[in-house]
Length: 65
Image (cartoon, rainbow, N blue to C red; front, side, top):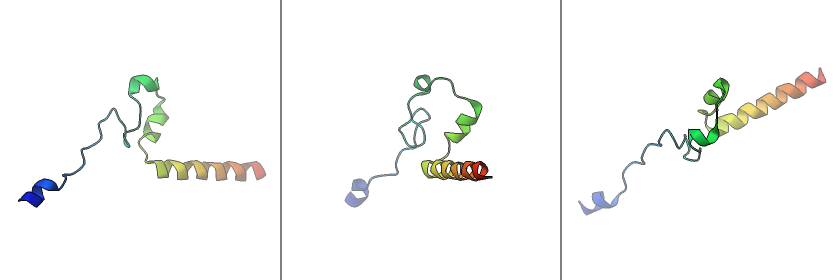
């Protein structure tokens, strides 16, 4: 019984105002959001990084063509 009381429970879910990782400022501080930017904000950071690297590679290929 004492061991069960000492173990922490599951982490609380992030609130909508803090964003996915808890570091996003409130919506009022961010200003107006464009339609496409709202969808990108939902992606996790590694996915955004890979997306930006892919876009940079495509731009380089188009510049060389």
